[in-house]
Length: 264
Image 1 (cartoon, rainbow, N blue to C red):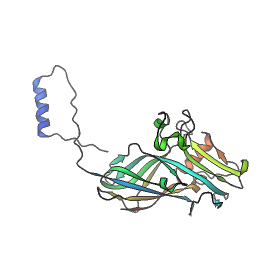
Image 2: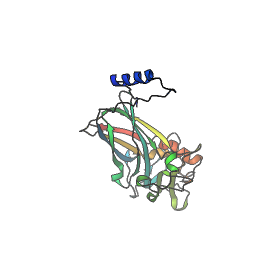
Image 3: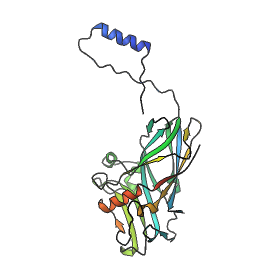
Image 4: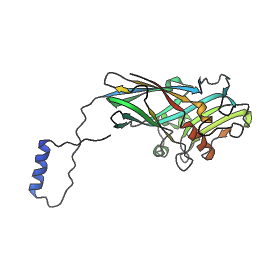
């Protein structure tokens, strides 16, 4: 966010006095920015899990068709959203601190969360990371969404699992016809973090001290198999290492979010 620095008459007088007093050595004068007089509010993010055009239902035996024409029923779909940045219509940005959310399609309460302490204003874009940034991957034992007890963690050397997808497919060559994608990796060419930026094209989100806009998004699990890489389950039914296959799926899930609507 741009910071505007202003000098009051008192500040100018103080600086003048300093120079006239004849300091023995040159000192850097740091003028603190004024405290913003603007208020703050909140913004709510609502996520709907999808598979293509269908609402995603877990553990029902329903077969969803992938871009390759494979059939898969889904038992798990979980992912991290972190490092949220909101952009105002003016171009200014605000980044949420401690911005880590574990979203689980099996628990609808995790698919809706509120971002607090958002500076009031009109916002026309939301950006975030799918996954967990490298610093938090090596920061020792953590709590909340980043608690290893959430089963989204490998080891302190391998770090967090950013996305878990599990299911069953007749095309799978794995035991029990399982499909298992656990994607992570916080460093190197095959790292799994992906950045997403979504312009709020339906309407801007207006944050005030008394109103909380809602941003409705879709998270499409079908995109894991589709774009830019068409995934053939017969040849890729298992990915639990940081390699070219996991990178391919991460490149796909970078496209799994889309805007439904904004309600002020």
